[in-house]
Image 1 (tube, helix red, strand yellow):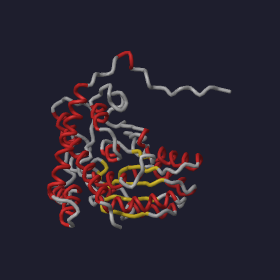
Image 2: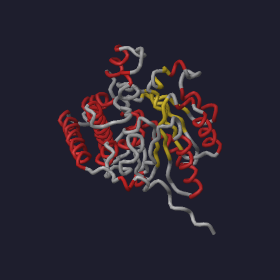
Image 3: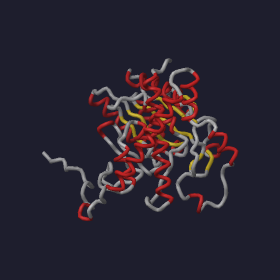
Image 4: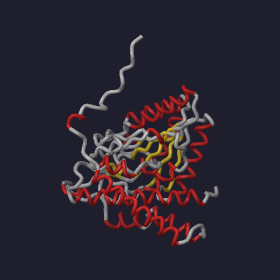
Length: 329
């Protein structure tokens, strides 16, 4: 498959957006400017960006606790995302949701959740809505190798396959569920092997290769739109940081080696795509460098936006908690 230059550059841009966004958030967390739990997506950008590049704005996605990369990969607003993490009124959820609850229904971002695997059945529900309403959209869910062991994940896959729903299951296998290797908790060689139990296609993809992720997802999207049902895609990837910021201060033993981290860093998704663009004369080094600088500046603007945004007022605490009641007949 020949991927258009415009799409390749968009994927590079969105990976840089996530990288600079996460680096900025981590610095603010370390300084105490941001409080609470944060889960860095650095190192995994190729999975979400490649997958979302195959979607339309009208398609739905949902994510997990490692939640900043997913909405930004689908074109989410960096100002609103940063303000939400800062707990400010101009954030996606008016500062009340925080890091693990970034949602923008206008471009199909259903949101994320800190409850492991909880977004999987929600996304299947969105796919069911497409069938019931006769609408042409697909839904895609991101979940981790740890979530692949949860009952809700398997129940959702079974139902999606049974009803041939237009949903794509993307397992971000970053090798560890907190500190437990997936090799110690998964009974099959590849998580994608589990797809056979539900009579759906399953494939394992190099998650550091954003183009490979795009191509695999695009094929799954075509299947889904044609009424052929769901697909399970396992993206092999790696998080450079600990499971969550601050974990190093409380864990008692090391669970991975410096050599392992170095090996994965050498296959950084941004570096791999940049090398491909330059070596194949698709883009110049200057073009690639300009994209990085532009997005670094945009994230600086987002940080300034978040800092200047007001906090929610105390009297607004109970607003937006309940949906509008459905009137009884």
